[in-house]
Length: 162
Image (tube, rainbow, N blue to C red):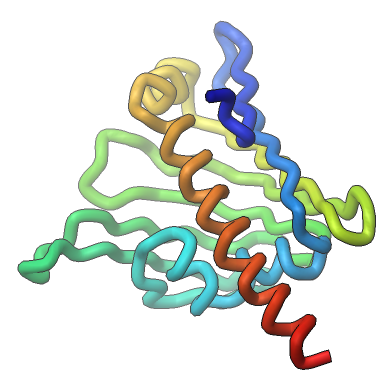
């Protein structure tokens, strides 16, 4: 089965581009990145901090059933333009990867569909290639599938209230 989230990585480069079209209006797609409660649901992680503003920061953490931390990530938000753009850093704690720079761009395609383009810059091509050797593509596709499913339920709830 073909993945809906597409990853484009040119040989010899230190960056990649991720694109995904969602069956969601632009405002709801953006909300999935803006509201901590929604981020927690589709990412399957605890949002410890999410300051959506220029010079804001964010921090996520996942624990196993015994309470041990299995994933921690954090970063700084450099640009936050509602329904258009988020520019941030992403750094995983206790992982062999340097901080990366992420440019997230949101655009409406139709009234009911939207597109996310993520341009990610790594410190080196070697680090980017190391990331791509992980089940990265499947993981981000699975997360985006959950985002679509969870936000669809919000869309239905909002529609019922209207």
